[in-house]
Amino acid sequence: MHKILITISLFCFSLGYSQDSKPTSGKYTDHNKGKIYFYWGGNRDSYTNSDIHFRGANYDFTLYDVAAVDRPVGWHIDYINPAKMTIPQTNFRLGYFINDHYNISIGVDHMKYVMIQNQSVKISGSYPNTFNFNNGIVDLTDESFLTFEHTDGLNYVNSEFSRVDDISKLFTINNTDKIQISLTEGVGAGILYPKTNVMLMGQPRHDDFNVAGYGVSAKAGLNITFFKHYFIQGELKGGYINMPNIKTTFNNADSASQHFMFFERVIAFGGIFEL
View (cartoon, rainbow, N blue to C red):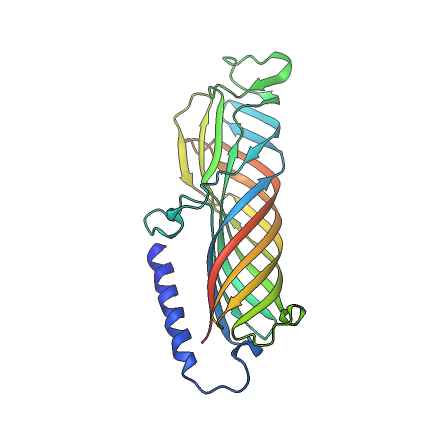
């Protein structure tokens, strides 16, 4: 993955320099059709509470209204360290403009989902009699019953269809080849490919990648492009995630399911070039 990202970046930058030498009419930024873009950035995430249903050979129970948070690292060198790029919460996207306003893209939203350990939640269903919960309430604080994270991560692998509109004139910017400000909106859908870290009822810790479900999303953002090719983009993205097939232990009979809404804040840096 790291080698692919570096290769794409070098290829796109070489395209940008070669395009500068071609004769053009008007401004480079007057048209987008046929251009490709890519970006790399980071995110912060919020999640609605969710019910998590656990199933196995000798248990079938649900935890209700479970709260979770993300796991940010702040501004960190790991975002650009090829050996550690998956440690922070990151976003990668590669897109192509089918006309001046609309583009299609593929990307990965590498979020992180961490169940809050210091909470008590309602439980119902069947579970081993070694656990005795008063009034159907389980205290998760001491980690003996459950730890539950999608931390490498909550990977939303998705495609998007987006629109871009130049609003530079609102800021009295005339030479958009030096600086251009645009609005972008889009919708997306894809699969969830999390690496879920679980310790369930004293069983060995399980941490593996798995196609767990699907997601849909919508976004709105602001793009500021400098010197025709290089940009910073901020996005607000919300969506729905449904994972009916979460792996929880090394036993294939064991699994979990959950669904929730997410809200993502993204800051990314990238480039846009002609093919």
